[in-house]
Length: 127
Image (tube, rainbow, N blue to C red; front, side, top):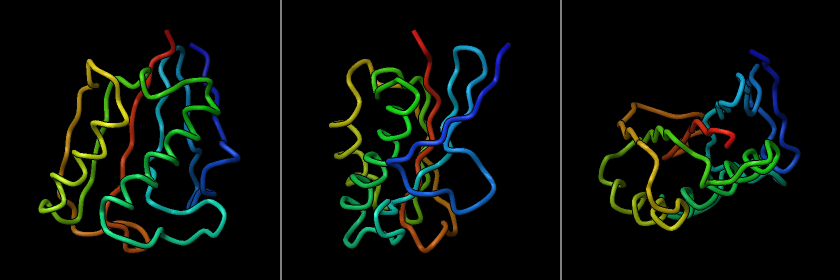
């Protein structure tokens, strides 16, 4: 099985020792993205809706660098610092992914890097 890493120039620079994504055969594992604006390196201003939109823009840039799109996602993991943000996140989420929606887990966490309210990672499949 071949492995390779993916660095997306249109996504925020990694804030630690990790790749934007790794491939293992036909499976592409995307690292979690937070709502960092690539041009500034700062968190996007606004509520969880604005943050979710930025997270999906960042994930989209990584998927594009891998030659993929949101339709290729098979599993999504969502991390929220407040489960009261679940409905707002869901409202953005359903505009990003086509049906049938990928499998998903959503959990509440005590904190996220840089004070983000949301982080999302996903796994995609090359078809």
